[in-house]
Amino acid sequence: MALIVQKYGGSSVADAASIKRVAKRIVDTRRAGHDVVVAVSAMGDTTDELLDLAHQVAPIPAPRELDMLLSSGERISMALLAMTIHSMGFEARSFTGSQAGMITDSHHGSARIVDVTPVRVREALDEGAIVIVAGFQGFNRDTRDITTLGRGGSDTTAVALAAALNADVCEIYSDVDGIFTADPRVVPNARKLSTISSEEMLELAANGAKVLYIRAVEFARRHNVLIHARSTFSSNEGTYVLGEGQTLPHNLEGAAMEEPIVAGVATDLGQAKITVAGVPDVPGKAAEIFKIVAKSGANVDMIVQNVSAAATNRTDISFTVPKSDAAVALRALAADQAEVGFENLVHDDQIGKLSVVGAGMRVHSGVSATLFEALSTAGINIEMISTSEIRISVVLRADDIMVAAKAVHTAYGLDSETEAIVHAGTGR
Ligand code: ASP
Ligand code: MG
Image 1 (cartoon, rainbow, N blue to C red):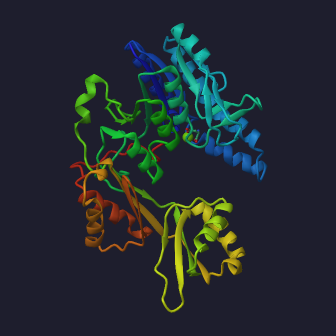
Image 2 (spheres, rainbow, N blue to C red):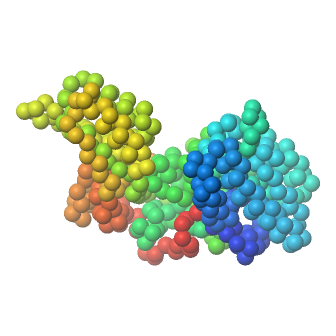
Image 3 (spheres, rainbow, N blue to C red):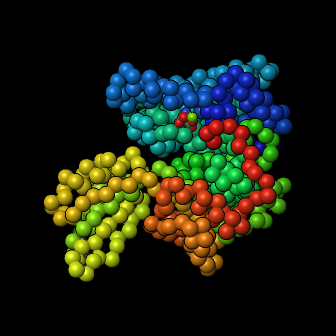
């Protein structure tokens, strides 16, 4: 008998029929003899709808009240799910985040979990109940207020519960079959991975892959929680995300055999490029520029500085930020133009970022050559390059990103013979 934590995303509980399907799955797990704790997201697009409503009544909704509002989405789905399980003849008990002991800091809208005290969860389990916990929310001890964990936070709820309860596995259900070597909507013959290391998963998630949330993967890595990302719509095995030194349960050992150099290709169309042109090439200018950008709150990703022109001793510095941060960064830089002494600013939001991630890069050479070769053969121009120990990223024209992703995917031998099945819309 194992203790299994399951997380169901919004698309898995979008309506009564879906809730019944999920309930059946939970009951089947219980019937197999396991203890089950479920973290559940709000139904379908509930969170977005509640956010819309809030903005209709107030231009800048009060953060405390916004959390009161948004946390209600998960309370609806948890109660409906518990009722459904009841009607199937099983004991089920739902708890809000605070009842379940999800203690967070006081940061409304993006609270971090600081402690989990699942006393009532354990009691309910001991009494033989299936436990349903509202995802995405917690409680701060100082303010005594309800908090939310940020969009997609139910993944983190599930992993944190799994860690606190010392669960055998944390199953994260969504409408995709697992972690793929690329987004199947971009690369149709992407392949489902049976395992991926948590460090690779973190790099993929940080660079545009949307299957799992970064915070949840980080939490799992820190607390040694085994994640199994799988689909609500099939009973197939999904993808196991393995932390350092973590191994698969014995019955699944065969799955860990494959160890490709490259685990996957991620694409991100959410970034913009800002070029600060004609910067005097003297010490301290980069520091000035990035201090201004940092103060604006914009989150810088890639940076490139050109060789300065001999005639003018001026250079161009380009960097990327999330599209939503571009305006504040540009405004801040423009305000200090005279002081820094640069010539002008160029804003370009038609870029795409492509990243190749693989732990095998540490020991294999030629990984970047394969990437550049594939792009060159496809006739695609590279605008920026950055690397980490296990990742190479390039910035391209946004229009080129689909063709580039397919070409690169093929070049690393990642293509599967069949097309991946995409069940529903969003991947969540
Ligand atoms: N309902 C929240 C959201 O849509 C949390 C979650 O789905 O994980 O972001
Ligand atoms: Mg959601």
